[in-house]
Length: 155
Length: 185
Image 1 (cartoon, helix red, strand yellow):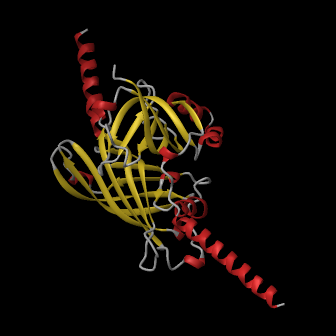
Image 2 (cartoon, helix red, strand yellow):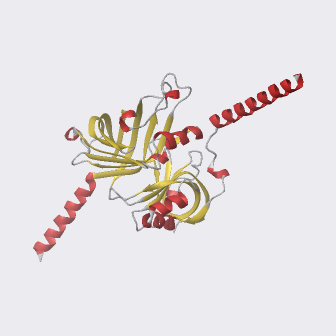
Image 3 (tube, one colour):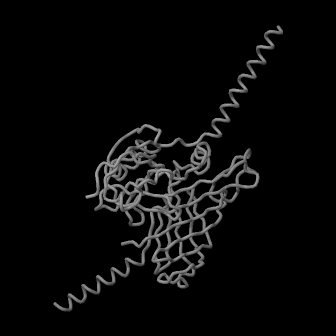
């Protein structure tokens, strides 16, 4: 009888500790670095734009929240007021782009002089689609991006 | 023939002038802050992919932002923000459309910092309300920098805060806007 009581208390304590560890872990969980994640899908920037433009609901199902590896021509590199970089990938003759905001730690070589006009492979989280409501072109938004390779040099 | 050429030149000139009236960015920044004194930590998310278009001639101003683009330091907070509060699957985009009230007082060709007031409508979480916000337009070396801080009542937009954490989350979120605009060519 006494043994059963001890075992019950020990079991309860064990479960409480496990639950506490789980809560602590969940509470402190950070978004992992995309560099450490494997890509769910690899495709060309223009193909990603086409997918969202043709059927945004289907593209949301296929890509939203996924780690996408994108190959594309760097149309421009924007630096925001606080020093963050965004690369626009896609067809240089089109207003539409895949806009990849870069992880703040991955700013090496991210100057327009070095990156614009090259083709890159990068990885990031597909965050959504901004349709062309303002006459600026439609954009697929990719966050927490990191550059994998520069696949060709400037023309 | 000369008249046609002259008209064409004038049309080109007018188009060029009109084009310089419009400024934009697609990499603006918005900070969402719902921290209060009793919050156990900072409740702040940042979105670095804000689209903004401004017409310096009319003072028209428009912002659009994807809610899933807000990044929080803690993954759990980001998930709660998207799933339980702003329901970003149902309401993926927030849009502000407004006008700079005192646009005539801003000299877009002269460097300086111009305080302005913006009035417009904010559509968030499927609901639209009027917003009046104070802001600044900074002109420096041909660049236009917009900044503003205003508050948005979460309940006004149908964003419910569970009773359990009601005293740990601000009823009015503090929204900080920071956009560096380039001319729209």
